[in-house]
Image (tube, rainbow, N blue to C red; front, side, top):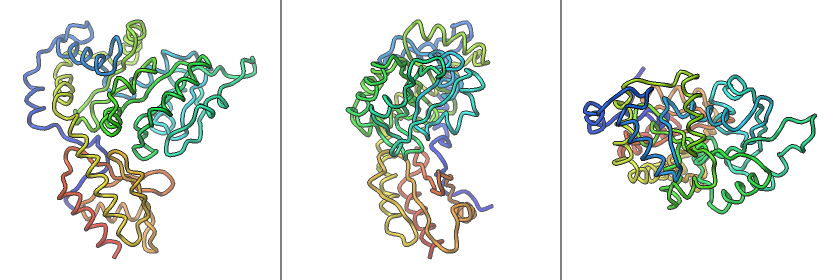
Length: 345
């Protein structure tokens, strides 16, 4: 395989910066399981304040945060209402059924978004023959929708509908700060309507590990028990929590650079024969496009790019996905475009 020149597979491939590594090395630590790690406690307080919630819980991953949220808000046999391409539908290993014994009732969205009317239509009537509609799930930004940002009015409308119907509300905010930077709305405004919010440190923020779940003090106390049961308790976790604190101090505002570079990539791809893309759909750091060329399927095109040192990922329905992040600069974007153009020529 060729030397990897440009890794656009995901923002999860971001490597810790020298400054982040130094912060990790120097972190104060204690026993996290016993609530004695000062750096973990600082990170939890910081994220709770950022999201406008009473408490936050540090976890090994945002997938665990999502699964604990489902466990908090449901009973076995209940239904979770969410968009059809949401993260738990495709990428959480069947966790909702395995861990919580719930069904997923999916809504067909438009680029990951849905409406209040769709929520009202999805909620089951209160009959014994039906599963109980228990939890409404929103993902912001929406990954498989293309890094889509929920318009605030639509977000509030959907949440109001869910609340009026007696649903609990969870926000999958793995890339919530991308949504905040792109929309100009503070993270706590986007998080305010929800009972719980999951929050990831390892994507655009560039930390090597970790996520958090935020909510009320009562919910997070219960979540801590589920964390223990799922094997999520840690020891001297300040070493990794320090990476999250560093990211919050240094890597939030720069998310706008990732968004700019994603649009730069999309605009350049739109000029290449054989590429199908709508650059106006690029709102944050994700670029989805299709290859229309007699020599390639999406799979063979990915393989050919990889041989030339450009790494992308497979999207839904034959699309390809490129994700910008801290380790990709303007020169890397331009080089990737040149390699794609050469391959299609």
